[in-house]
Length: 268
Ligand SMILES: Nc1ncnc2c1ncn2[C@@H]1O[C@H](COP(=O)(O)OP(=O)(O)O)[C@@H](O)[C@H]1O
Ligand SMILES: [Mg+2]
Figure (cartoon, rainbow, N blue to C red):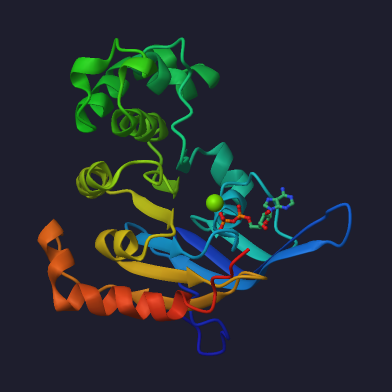
């Protein structure tokens, strides 16, 4: 970090870097300012969560990083390059809240989809099988989405996001629709997959306990317009065990996040 640099979050060779990013959506009435001067950085290999109330702009941040949207102000780099270049190089995979699997394709065929789009499917079959094994679905490669539980469908979505061998995974509330026990299990599975693949994970959630349990760092976004309210390093030992959630240290982190979120949440 250069001493003259005004942004404390700027780091060299960041996997993801946002500098003073602003986003305004045009609407039929007044333009909607969603993000204001958002600066944050995710280091290679790090697990960082973006936490905030519903509607504060979390998905917008992820879509900007993924080059689905272009920011109104500021600068974003992914592996030191523009989001557009990173997308072309397949630097990241994206997992949404809904697994968005194609109903008429088997598990294996769903995982192969990103490679088919780029014409690489013939070489990817072995890799897709290895990833299904990694996410615990080796026996389900011929099953169809309707034959899988919600947690299993999200595993397929994770394998599909990893099939192009991205260095970065962008995840937008991937376990938000799962029941609590399945979600806890998927959290553990995700940490195992993260360690096995050595990817960088940028994870959106509105759950403080989930953010603390998973992350090296939690960035809290406030609302109207979204700004970074807190960038909190989570100094808890790994590998993380669910029993950690019953400790005083864990409660201290969730309390700090809760205090930041209170006042940011508005009843609509
Ligand atoms: N394409 C768009 N056009 C207009 N408004 C949008 C668009 N996408 C998101 N918004 C608005 O921006 C705000 C933030 O949305 P979003 O990033 O989805 O929030 P979050 O993911 O934190 O719930 C919301 O008020 C939403 O309605
Ligand atoms: Mg969202």
